[in-house]
Image (cartoon, rainbow, N blue to C red; front, side, top):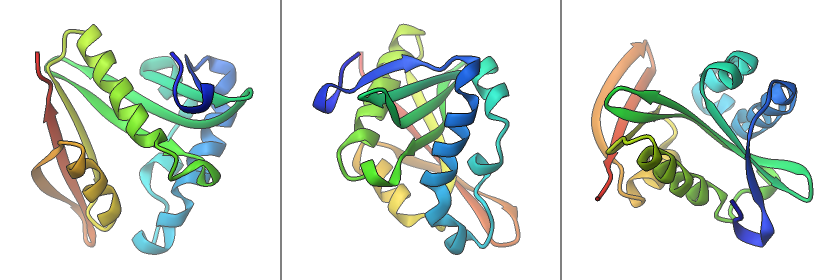
Length: 156
């Protein structure tokens, strides 16, 4: 699949675990001071994610610039992680990846996308809301750690 500026999307392979980790850590680094800790994607086992989930990579000129991790669930497709290299942010890659997730969900016969983000990451909540995601619920995971669960129904 091609995207902006002839970017390509491909499925991650086991050998991509290190670059997936590095990109995710770079993308989420700005949230460490906001949350007071590393967000969960920074601490994830990316080799296991590539093995057990759908991890699709966006490359430009052979370099990884963004990724999305998707988890097929019985009633939806869960967006586990969206990460864009800081130098590539603001170029529409996040929106492109959400559109890609919708296509994957449809291919898998899922009629809904779900995701969650930290309530402290107000820009993320607003980003998803602007793209049709509605807040389903808030969940306190630990003192000061509130997850905002969001969902988007797909049209036929």
